Amino acid sequence: MRIFVAYLANDGGADAVKLAGRVARSVGAELDIGLIAPGGDPGPALTEVLREQAADWLDDARALVPDIRSEAHIAFHDSIPSGIIAEARRVGAAAIVVGGSGGGMIGSHSLGSVVNDLLRSSPLPVVLAPRGIRNSPIARTTQITCAIGSRPGAPGLLDLAIGAARRSRIPLRLISLVALDQLPTGGADPQAKDRATAHAQTVLQTARDGLPEGVEVTISLAHGSTIEDAVERLDWHDGDILLVGSSRLAAPQRIFLGSTAAKMLRVLSVPVVVLPSPAEDTV
Image (cartoon, rainbow, N blue to C red; front, side):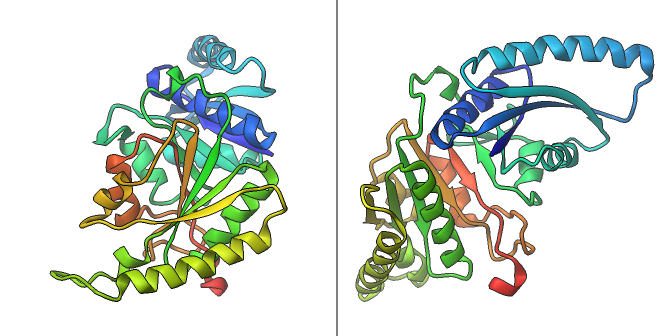
C-alpha cells in the first residue's frame, strides 16, 4: 500500500508528513511525498533551479519519517489540486494526506483553497492533518472512529471501517448519528433515542461479525442539541483517527464534504479521513 503526501515546505506540510508516517506505521504502507509546483514546464534553466530547491525541501520532509520507506518527487501542473490527484493516481496511492495551508479555519483544521478543491472532487480518500500534529509523540494510530448514519452509502462506509480495523488490528469505535440525522427542525423527537439504539445494535453486530477475535469494537451514541455538541461529548485522544463519508451530493466515487462532517471538523483536533461516495450502482 502507498500513501501520497501533498507536501509544502511549511508547518502544514510537516503536519501532513508526520500524520502520513503515523498512518503508514499502522497499516504497513510506504509513502510518496510529492511537491506540486504550479504552471506548465517553466523551461530547462528554471526547472533545474526549482528541482534543486525542491530536492532540499523533500529531503527535509523525508527526514521527518526516517523509519518509513518513502519516495519524494516534484511535478508541474497547471492546477495544484488536479496535479495532486494525478500524481497520487500515478504512484498507485490508496489515499492523499494534506495539511493546513493557512486558509479557511475550521477548528484545528485549516482548509485552504487546494484542500477545499480536493474535498469537492478527489476520487481517493483525503486525510486531513490537524494543525500541530507534527509535535505529537504518538507514532501509530490507536483507535479508528467511524461516524455511521442511516443514509445511502452508510453500509459501504461501515465496510471500509471494518476492513481498516481488520487489516491494522486497531480497535474500532463506531459513532451512531442516527438520532441527530432524524431530529426534526425546531423540536425534539422522543423516539429518536430508541431508533438510534436499535440501529447502533445492528451496526455493532455487523462489525463484530466482520472482525477477527481480538480486535475490539465498540459503539457510542452521540446525543446533543447540535452535532458539534454531541461530538464534543465523546472522548477523543491523540491517537484517534475519524472516518467520515461524503455528502449525498457527491458524484459516484468522488468526495464531497457534507455539512455533518464540516460541523464535526469545527470541534475536532484529530485526523479526519473523508471517503469518496460509493459507485453509482451500490447506492
